[in-house]
Amino acid sequence: MQKVFKVGLIGCGHIAETYFRGHKYFNNFRIIKCADIEHSAAKKCASVYKISAVSVKDILKDKEIEIILNLTIPKAHFEVSKKALLNNKHVYTEKPMAIDVEDGKELVKIAKRKKLYIGNAPDTFLGGGNQKSKELIEKNLIGKIILGNIIFAYPGVQSYHPNPEPWFAKKEGGPVIDMGPYYLTALVNLLGPAKQVWGSLMWNKKKRVIGIGPRKGKSIKVLCPTTYLGTIFFKNKTIIRFTLSFDVIAHHRNHIELYGDKGSILVPDPNMFGGSVFTCKKLGGYWKEHKTNEMPLGKINIRQKSLRANEAPINANYRGVGLAEMAYCIQNKKKHRCNGELSLHVLDIIKSIMHAAKIGKRINLKTSCQIPKLFSNKEVNKILK
Image (cartoon, rainbow, N blue to C red):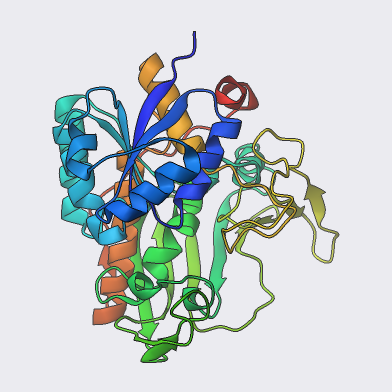
């Protein structure tokens, strides 16, 4: 019988809506209480979703709560997750797991010692787009992958977020921490762990203007680099060039392109769950479309305007599947895919890219992880309503 885990939410901001939507899709977790350092935010969230608002201290001590869903700002991720683990709660955190690698290592160590699960977003790599890509790669459709490119580039979060300061903060701001987790986790899922990175950076504008909400028109300071360019060297000898930027108005390149010795593959947006995969096996040949809209986590489920700015109508978004898959693995004593080792390795790549760009030298990674197993439709259907 499928157990329904009782979840306590800490951090009632912009992303919370997406996780509550997960109640529609997944059969094994339920957010029953919420808390926020600003109690008024918790009360508002509780009113909208008909749950209880409590203090952060009380939700951590609450014996009814089995999993803490940590949706706080990045610089608070470590502190909140650590407290959750020390209070004998499993924890699932928005990305990144922490903003320092050593803090991430401590979380993994505590979870292992206390035999608790720690999971982290992004879980988008579990969606139809990345999983179909993984299936085709593991079938050797394009042969051995030699090199590739990834790009995330747009003008910045200030146009659609009412409180964009964390994205431009000194330590936890910038495109590598913001969007890097989606692209880097997708790559590790497809290629395995990385071993070395190199990069360069740009710092384009010192100020940005808020484009939405009650503070619209207010100028804020940019305290971090806003573009990173560079290279990731993987243990399987694949070399990936990357562009991660808050300084590009528009571009016409695919999110992830991988080039093998038998052909090439275009991987859809790693920030979403669906989208078609395209492969080409001949110079000048046609690009074959591999649709994902019939896969359980590739079907379109966004058909009207969402509060989430990156959710246009006609899209697939199943955020929360990582939490559901972790809950299933807790019950069945299995290793979950959005696990601490994977997230720690992605954090290591993120911080190493930023450091390499700052000092102008290659950086060897200090962590590794196992490549996640393919998420079969049979497994997905076990956690879907």
